[in-house]
Image (cartoon, rainbow, N blue to C red; front, side):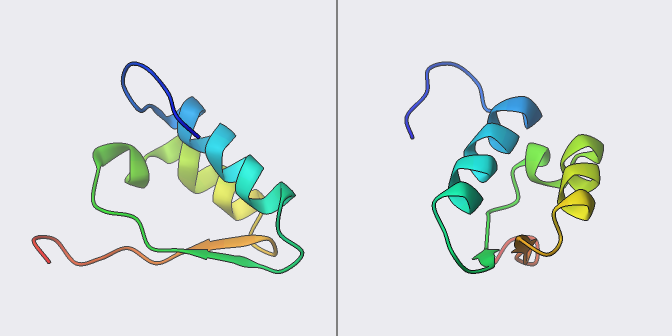
Length: 62
């Protein structure tokens, strides 16, 4: 997926929806520490889709 502009929570959730839609197994994702990867909207969405996707955050400055 390509996009123009700035990554925000709505765009990230759209991307994640596409990932889980195209996978027949649980998606495991390791993102960088962009602020949007830790936002409230994302955490809420991930909680609602915990059977479909899980995110493992890297430690800061890794």
